[in-house]
Length: 192
Image 1 (cartoon, rainbow, N blue to C red):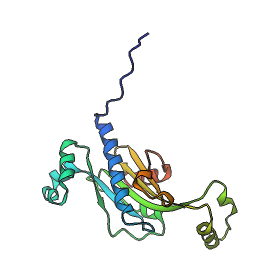
Image 2 (image 1 turned 45 degrees about the vertical axis):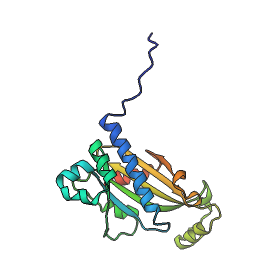
Image 3 (image 1 turned 90 degrees about the vertical axis):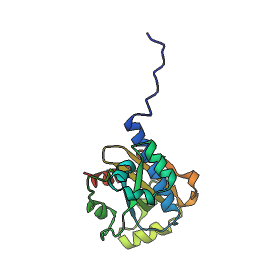
Image 4 (image 1 turned 120 degrees about the horizontal axis):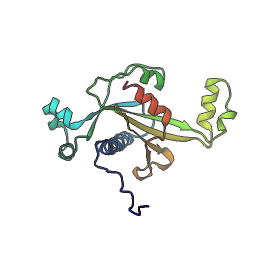
C-alpha cells in the first residue's frame, strides 16, 4: 500500500484554464450588469477566446484594456464577452433563448436575468389567476430579488453567479458551476 498522497489535479490543463477563464468571464459580466443597477432586462453576451478574436480581427486590440491584452497573451483560454444588442422580441426568457444561435466563432454564451424567488411552499398559496398570482408574488413578505448570471462554453464547462438585492455587494455573490441547472441547460442549447 502506497502512502504517497495523490497529487492535486493539474490546474494548468486546457480544461482547468477554460473553467477558470469562464468563471472570470461570469464575474466580469455579473459585475458589469450590477453596475447598471436592478430592474434591468435580460442581457445576452457572446464569449470568444480573446487570442483567436485578436488573430481574426487585429483592430480589436485598440478596444481592449492593456490588462486584458496581457491576460490574453498569457492564456489562450482567456475569454472576452461581447454584449448582444438588438435581441429578437420574445414573450419570455425561454422563447428568447430558444431563438438564439451562435456562429462557430463564438466559444460560449452568457445570460443575465433577474428573478423573484420565494421560500419553499410559498407558491402553494398563490392564486390560480396569473395576474393575481404575480401581484401576490410581488407583495409576498419573504420574496427575494435575485440576479442570475449563467455562462456555458461550447465545449463543456458552465459557471453561475447569483446576487441578491438584499445583499447587493460584490463580495456577497454566490458562485459555482451548477447553481441554476435549468438555465445552464437553456444557455447550453443555444450553442448546439
